[in-house]
Length: 273
Image 1 (cartoon, rainbow, N blue to C red):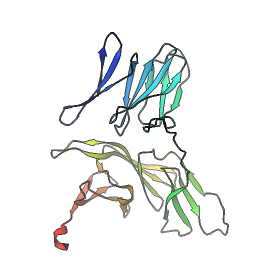
Image 2 (cartoon, one colour):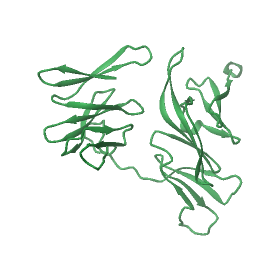
Image 3 (cartoon, rainbow, N blue to C red):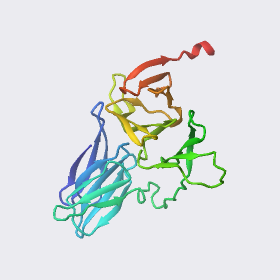
Image 4 (spheres, one colour):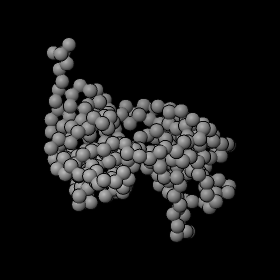
């Protein structure tokens, strides 16, 4: 992605998108007239462009949908920031060298591709739970929409209780979490891998967290874990992760010690037809 000035007279800026695999031009997205863009960022999934725009009365944060070109000014501040940072559609941070403060803008509450309809607040609850095999008194629960990881004692005779342990911030919105007993595996940093037969979506980082010791056991990067539906990943034993290839032609087994592919299990469905 690159940025260029479209018309000098009206200060119209355009964003030019190119394919990182075959280097071909994909599309052109125009900004609003007099949007004086000085910082551009692309979220992890590549679905939105986040840009900082200088205005007469301050700095604005703008967002462009890469597919539809829909444009929103979603945050405004009275001062003129000169720097910013944004890696996802959750928050954008801006600052100015003359100040000692950082400003954090919540983008998730404002970005809406339905053009005008309000975002409804989703209720938080238990998205999925996992029994601890070596201690049947406890279960591990994962919050809906990648909420906190909690541990519950299910043998207490109370209809309402508090979680024994709560772990917040282990994963971001676009991460995938796999739980087995007290081991939590987080697949993070979505990206695209280059292959001879074409690119595919992958996770580039694996985090392994122990709920019992409350510590990260391991961080594996760079890795290339194929993205598949979150409920199709399985932890086998203590050190292996099983998933399905994107074309669903075979299983892939990764090592949770090195992050590398151990083997691929080819499936021959013709025998069962």
